[in-house]
Length: 366
Image (cartoon, rainbow, N blue to C red; front, side):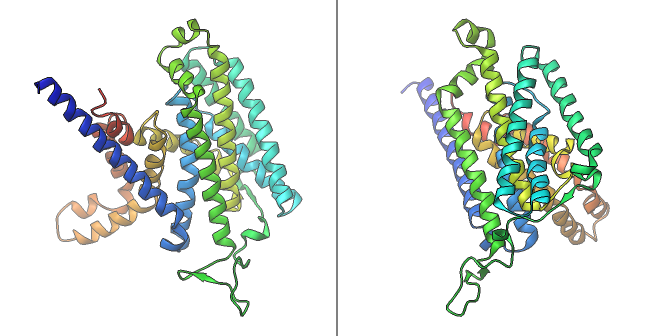
């Protein structure tokens, strides 16, 4: 066996190991999210698990744009916010009914589709940087409207509303022979559990739809557009049509994610749905997980969400544990968690330049 053959065999072995690690991580995250009501029954952990589910959808839908098609957009939170506000306003005006939720969701989807088609047709013909600026302007306008139209949106205070009775903690999903709520592994089978699984299975369905898209001929065309737009055009593909189509699809999926987030929070405001900080989070999650890999969305959203919620707690423990060592307690003070989050991000980018999933799955591919 020649040296070249041995090297190729070694690279393929490394590639298989990397893919196995990614699949194992994703599988573990999936199991933890599915069993979250039983493994992590406290309120804070439930919020983290629900946020991870929603952000997996958001990050994966954004990856359809930036990772698979090469479209840089800053308007993804606009569509997320439209979904959240659509559900919130409908539930507040029409009451906590399924009809209101469905009506608000459908109206939000229609509005998002029209806006996405308009932005796509008008802007996707221009160069990437100009399109990014147009989407940033559109997102900024939407944020201003949400603040100014306070009669509908509640302005900076946002909207508080009730959700369908099925999701109320007082709702008994399963009861024993005495009529008391049944407990599964010590956790009450009530409306709170129903609400979590509404978010979980809704996110799972949307994620599977996106997986089907990237595995379809459409996904192949999108990758061709990303790699060489002029060549794709020469082969007969209407590039603007495909770019507009995927922009609309990603917008609709982000809108659905917004609806689920609104139902979970029972509150919708600029900070929870239209903040530019959410757009930054999505970008970081895509980079951490790996652009152009649907599995990367799961890893990136999970790591980033866990760091945002629990890094301060870990630093507080570390600060107390190193109390007798000079400088370390100050460096590990919880108030400096953003500094350490930035350092962790830099290290991840350095050691995983294509993202965690991207680097592990592509290593040894050539």
